[in-house]
Length: 466
Ligand SMILES: [Fe+2]
Image (cartoon, rainbow, N blue to C red; front, top):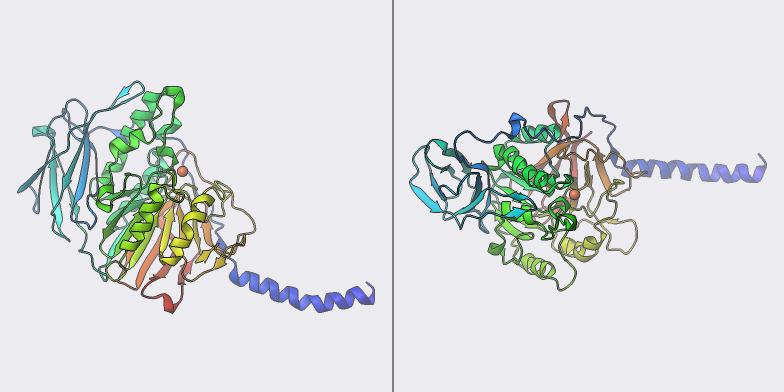
């Protein structure tokens, strides 16, 4: 090598070393864990896992969701297969003593291609006491069934409460494992980030509808006992011109009501609830959201209602992630990011949970507001977490973009679920649990510092990450 290039190399070498150290210090983690995987196929329809409850016309597919804005009501939904039967919910504060009763809305039945649904019941229980365990009974005589749920603490900035986050669940053995692991978590409400049954993967109209039934029977083991806060995903759209089924979200809307009117929303697909210390905003990735659409106007007004002195934790749910470095669905939600991201930053949203990408990823606090392609660190921005790893029949999205972008803190293509345990107005503990060969293993954990009450203390501190 002649003297000129040698000198240049000597001058540049320290810079290269320093740059590589800086890059390593900022780099996120791409987990190298290789997981055991059940086949990505649905559990056979005739499996005992999907068995209908015993007894003539026994209520099935029982699930509950929050029924009002502040957590003093639940909506209970169920289906009776043979005839309408009882449309009454008997309930009370002690087992086998049902001192109250509520009458359901008009029983509904619908057709989907060559399928006719069972009798769909929905019943609002309101005026409930906070922080109480309620028992409830559905159905008639020997076919009646009993369940229970706990109401949340009252709206209080220092209430503690544990949420679970599940997305893209489907109905495979991986889905069942996720559900079983979630039930061990001790969380009290599921924030479900869309794509429930994956029934739309079937070709025949009858198969599609009955897979909504089987999913309802699968989810009941959790959803009958605690509220699932529903977000709609692309697999809920179900636009099938070939089957002459063109009313979108039909199966989902009949079966999974939401309390949208309590937050003045014009659609069950976007709404908000307050629960204990949290204000939860649910958005629809697959409904119009640009300027002047109902969802845009609604969200602008809903942000005005957020009072961090009462509900310090501001959580947004949507299906398609705004930040994901997975090859699957890369940048699909750019439209929504452009429209809503500045509001998330202005309002200091704590976290945005999404699904859609069948893998796990957590971002640093970043925003793309600087008009550059690479988003910039921003202490006022939310953390974006993708939990589309419930375990549906489409399998894992295993291919990430390389190199890992700076905004990506941790990513791993495994099935699992998350929990967000709010401790008080300043701190929450977050875990992502992978389904690890039959066990639930925390693979990404950290302390959340609240964006309103603790922002001056920094953004996020890692407790552990692997
Ligand atoms: Fe999806």
